[in-house]
Image (cartoon, helix red, strand yellow):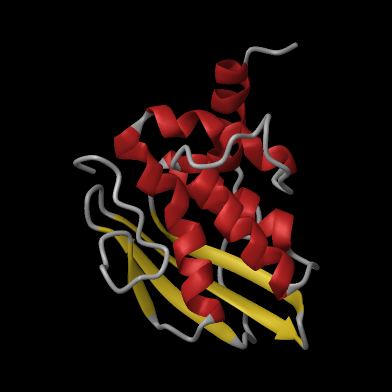
Length: 162
C-alpha cells in the first residue's frame, strides 16, 4: 500500500499545479466568497444548480496549496451530483478534517477525498482545507461571504488556537 503522506503530498502538488474547475462560471445561480483570515486564503465559488443537480461549479482566488487542492477536488467530486449529496460531503469532509469522523469505523462517502485525512494532525492547516467547503455551504444558502472565523457560520469549527 502506498505511503499516505506521500500520496497526500502528490495529490496536493498535482491539484495545486493543475487545479480542476478553476475560474468562474459565466452563468451561475449561486455564489459565495470565503476567507481564512489566519493565513490569508481567499476564494470564491460559483455554481449553477439545475433543479437539485449541480450542473457546473468553479472556484478562483488566492490561496495556499492545501486550500487550492481541496477546492479542486471538491469541485470534481460534486460536479454533476445533487445538492443533498454535496451537503453530506461538506459535513463529512469537515468532520474528517477536524478528527470527528473515524474513517475506519464510520460509514462515509468521501472516497478519494480521504487523502486529506492527515490534515487533522496539522491544526493550523485544517481551516485551509475546509475553507472551500465553508464557501460552498455559504453559496448553497445564499450567504455572500463567509469566514473560517465567523461565529455565526454553521460550519464554524474552532481548532485549538487556529
